[in-house]
Amino acid sequence: MAEIRPTRDDAELERWLALRNAVVPDDAISLAELRPWLDASQQIHLLALEGDELVAVGRGVREPWRPVARVIALVPPEHRRRGLGSAMLAALSHWAAAGGDDGVLSYVELGDEESVAFAERRGFEEVGRDLKVALDLTGKLLSLEPPRGVEIVTWVEQPELVRGLYEVYREASVDIPGDEDAEPEAFDDWLAHNMRGPGDSPEWTFVAISGDEVVGYSKWALTTAQPHTALHDLTVVKRAWRGRGVAGALKSAQLQWAKEHGYTRAVTNNEERNEPIRRLNRRFGYLPAGGRILMRGPLVTEP
Image (cartoon, rainbow, N blue to C red; front, top):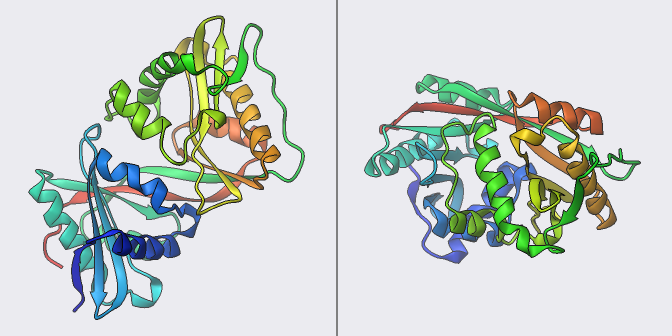
């Protein structure tokens, strides 16, 4: 049976990340993007080793703004049906129990019926669904202007807007389907975790302003692991300004920037119930590109 243990150093974390990215290549990230979250939350990264061969990986994340830990066990297809997934889930459940959790959340790739069945046999049930869509940036892009009285700028042009950005985040983030139980982060934590990571930049953070008021913003989360794909991070608009075309203008500015900077594809994940943003994405021409199912289940402490 494989030995399951935590990573011990950066070299082992790089091995963990390489296998993780091989199993879910459309969500590949680099160590630089992962590193800020190592200190932002309680995490464990597990290796399943048979001798020197890495045959599976697992991750547990406990974030102070979420009610329950999230775990993921990833086994390459050639190593499945050998009990590795069960053993990894048991190890992650022991970690979650030690932290006070009585259950866990986990994502399963949409269309991976084998993994869905694996989770359901262990008492997991679907609680949410993210639908991935992608846009080809090599063609002509839809251009949408902001409503009268609203201007789109980048954060790098007006760094003093940071408090206004945070107020939009605090108001709008709790309205996103699937995040109803999450508490908005404190200002300093939000700034460190969401705005100043390796994949974040004021240069590609777009801000909608009306006079002195920040009414919305959108940003990319870019990774060197996917150098030609621009990953949407967040598009949020204050409640009083929704339905006026602010989100469309922000997205239009984003996409034009990505095209001008050599990106050939834009990708985003939206919770299935988030119909306004899904409708806007269809207007821009985004096409289905997979997705993932969020499942919640009990601790499974026996392989």
